[in-house]
Amino acid sequence: MNHLLGIAGLDTATIAKLLADADDYSKHLRSVGSSSERRIDDRINRRDRRILTLFFENSTRTIQSFQAAAHRLGLQVVDLAIPRSSVEKGESFHDTLLTIRSLAFDVVIIRHPSTGAAHYAARILNCPVVNAGDGIGEHPTQALIDALTITQHEGAIEGKTIAIVGDIRHSRVARSNVHLLTKLGAEVRLTGPPTMLPHPDAYPGVLITPDRDEALRGSDVVMALRVQRERQSGALIGSEAEYRRGWGIDLEVLSRCCPGALVMHPGPVNRGIELASEILDHPRCVIGEQVRNGVAVRMAVLNWLITTEENAQ
Ligand code: NCD
Image 1 (cartoon, helix red, strand yellow):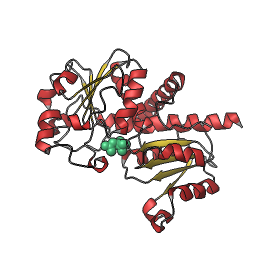
Image 2 (cartoon, protein in one colour; image 1 turned 30 degrees about the horizontal axis):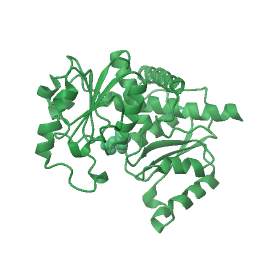
Image 3 (tube, protein in one colour; image 1 turned 90 degrees about the vertical axis):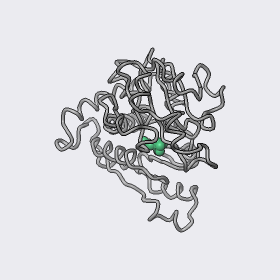
Image 4 (cartoon, helix red, strand yellow; image 1 turned 30 degrees about the vertical axis):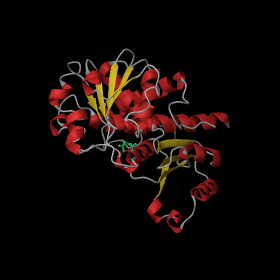
């Protein structure tokens, strides 16, 4: 059975297919606009297909874009609101998965604070599972969104220098992006406070440095990340002002990248900490496009999983 649990387990042919399909969907979504023609893919005419979103952590853009993607593909989408579920009565994660399995969904999309939770779910459930973020593990659809957005602006990933700035150690977005962008031939550099950087040998061939300027110099893309206080056990930065001075991005800092460098962020942004307000209004800041591409990428992923299942039957 096919799942999307991480970029680490994905072959290059599948990555290329998902990015190409997502690019087609994104062009189509742009041409039809948001109000017209809700369903845009008649290759899937499957009102009997039911997708479950199972989010044990908060989400705005990820859950909304998975649901929008399912609607666009003509699939039914059901959300299990955890605060109103039997999880609140003490039902374990394992038993919740057994219940979901009995209810027979066609794809389950899961977000959970524990690293490895999506892999665990894939072993229990009898349908494809999509990892929408597991602790500090992976967030594969976010990395696909970021790769699509860079490709649409820069023409390709190969040969580009991409600096990821911030709380790398606790970021599933950073982990999935390092795997994906290096597979696609980018030079990836990681920078942030020393307490938030991975082990120097974590990713062979990737520059890991606390020196923001060393990472940013000549880069084509700068991707800022949120400081994830909910995943840290102690105070890993002295103060917000210290973080801003050392690793925040404003117009002056941006001028150290290549002229015309893209600014990205998976959201949610701590405005004024990792990105200055002037950057959020900058024409090279593509955060809105990343959110829009979320629907297209998730359409490509759902279509791939459902089509593969149908072909296997
Ligand atoms: C990220 C996440 O939840 O992993 N957000 C997202 O999905 N766009 C990053 C974050 O929470 O900082």
